[in-house]
Amino acid sequence: KAGVTQTPRYLIKTRGQQVTLSCSPISGHRSVSWYQQTPGQGLQFLFEYFSETQRNKGNFPGRFSGRQFSNSRSEMNVSTLELGDSALYLCASSSEGGPYEQYFGPGTRLTVT
Amino acid sequence: EDQVTQSPEALRLQEGESSSLNCSYTVSGLRGLFWYRQDPGKGPEFLFTLYSAGEEKEKERLKATLTKKESFLHITAPKPEDSATYLCAVQVISSNDYKLSFGAGTTVTVRA
Image (tube, rainbow over all chains, first blue to last red; front, side):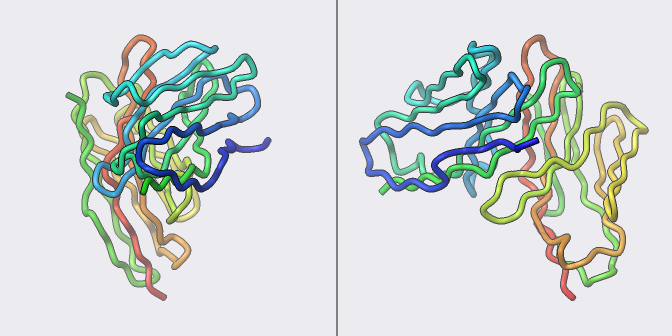
């Protein structure tokens, strides 16, 4: 089975711009979660989508949004980028009904200048 | 609030020198505790899931154990390729909430 894929792998954006990141989960997985990883804050949960519905949301501002499509692929959008948004954005997928392990993609490295 | 604390922050080992990493947690109700390995610039790689106190899981030189308040990841006779950051995460029992809450990680360096 192919793993979780994320595109693009690297992005450089300017403050004030917006960005869209994409994630394709493992085949058959219906849950997709997004995490932000920074050296100072570690891994922090952004949101989770299941069957095209946002099921959970972390403590991030409304500039961070996402969606999931009928094929379970997910996108994450960040509007009005700030320097502090520079991070590794990780997507993880899991199957319905447990055992709840989440499998991560390689991440998208976003640099905001 | 759920808390996950890992110690030590960093661990430098000689090849073959066994050691243990600690993950202590304070949660309202544990659904599962997860161990991941992360190499620089890559996403976390799933290692183990532990569900109840007393449970143990092994994979090659790694063994994970769980008590009611903490988990240990034992590395037996490590090799340089075991160098990585090891992350612990918990998932709490809550309707429709499956997010992982991560510790800060332990960075392990194994010297040949």
